[in-house]
Length: 162
Image (tube, rainbow, N blue to C red; front, side):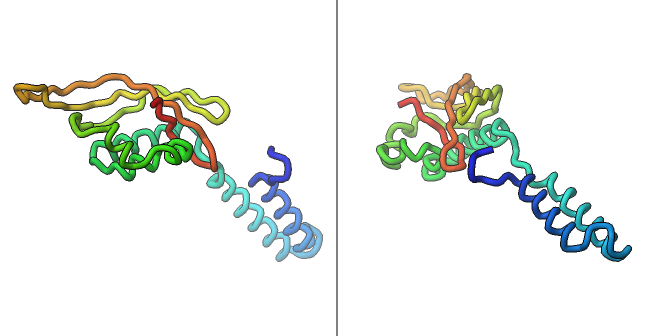
């Protein structure tokens, strides 16, 4: 636990203590006992939905969403997945120029995610299509790609290599 912050479980426990005290515990009447048991059951059942998903799940989803945005040529959305530090020194226009328009991205599939502390290494299989000069014939392929993601400001961001 981070000093000065209360976890959901600790907050729920404090709430239950207050609720138990407020209803008089199990000593007043069967009505209060039933009310206490109802609230205890409600709070405990609700705690299952309060846990946050593991970082691997969140990062995997964000990585695929970013590549979907690139496949749809939604550069603003793809750019929004980049770390705040990267975006502070690289404009959207510069990012678009680096991505270019020669390759048509078809999508990506997550193959492996390894997270430690506030960073995740993601391996994806990237599907793409491009026209070969000078004939203009199309080539479709796929290749593995590795990305590094970091968590800052309670969000996961891609750290581009360039």
